[in-house]
Length: 362
Image (cartoon, rainbow, N blue to C red; front, side, top):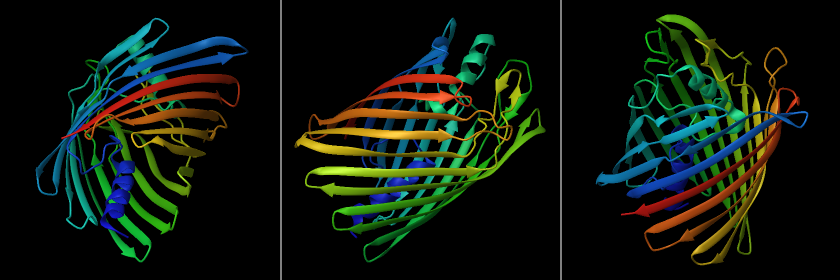
């Protein structure tokens, strides 16, 4: 297995730890995204709720010295629902990456500076709670939070056609205020351990990633509020080349003890993360050397909580294209269309997302 593949799998695994951008981790340049998302919730063919989010994340990356990259990212977002509006800038995230010359070891250290909008008012709180549900997969669920620090180490070894990886990540979370002149909220710290593997056999590639994650105790005003505890994730994918077509199959699972949502000052703090499963497949085909088209289907399922409530599911079809404009510039366009159910099939969901990504390397 060559160096290119080892770098690819390390970047793939780190994307589960630092889900920031799709740009290669060893390229200098910038990436600008444009997200337009709309969701409608119906009960018995009558609209009971809707929301829209437009977000514009931007990302810069630069090589300081050989094998060391520095990156910075920030989002701007506008959310609207009925007569409620929430807009503002997100926190500024800065990260340093070291990659060994062989490509088999990486270390990352990052900081999230609390420069975004975190103080919310009446209608903004209600809208923020809607965005926090996992089934919507919104690009920006929270604008501003506290000062967060994080670090990660990951290494890999090869055994003939098998690449094995292992790593860990720790995130130290800081406190912040949600409503002015009230108690501060301090989310629990997070620690993650992972194991990854990639097997290459001619025109077939199989990847598996196992992640153990534990959340610390959340506090409000210095007093314990709740503890999310541990969870386990498994991400598996199979990639097959048939002539020029790339076919992908994937299956993601998350297991954890169900927990209720936690609300303080009418603000939902815990996402009530529960057992979840996502599966699907996708196709990619090069129409010409500079243009690739793609299509994908996925089915996302979130289990009920400990009270038997909150079961949700969504099916999504997406179509996209990737254009190599110049040797240093790429443009990706994608449309996603979803239908689903919430609250044990009592509510119907429909959603659509339009995405444009412009990348330029230096």
